[in-house]
Length: 210
Image 1 (cartoon, one colour):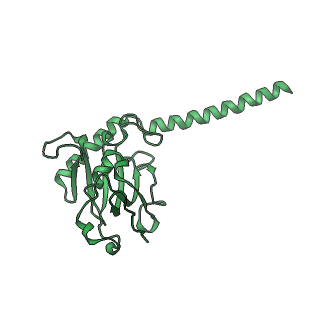
Image 2 (tube, helix red, strand yellow):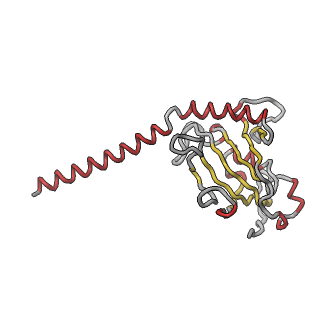
Image 3 (cartoon, helix red, strand yellow):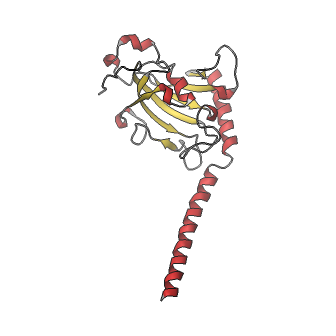
């Protein structure tokens, strides 16, 4: 009986090991050649930002914008619909002025990776304030300091105006780099749907938002 229990335990552990191995293999295949795939995707963004209407690029906030930089020194912006929220709750002086690095912001956002075989729209690594697919109907808001975000995210926020809805593309160099984090593989270009709801200076409370 004792030998049978030991045998059963060994088989169970073996099956668990095989399952874990299978999951890891699938994950490896999903993100195979990930660095080069992200490089190719970034190259396409450079082309779009220079040639297509509604696109622009913004150099990292801490760098000299008057000097041409490498592709990875910019975030790439596709301006979406900027009439999704009622701005009447926000001081009209803020409508044409952007948040500062030391400000706090209220936003709607969701983050995903570039498209892959299993995720044609890109794997969602951060659902953010959105429940399911990105939309106003499935969204809540959150608030944080601009200075607490990765450089690419902070760069975009410092050029947004209240009510702007941008799709923000952030090269890995302005995000989590070659190491990534627990939910983001290394070398990942990040894509955020981002709406700026409101912002305020340090030490001042944000107005509630309905």
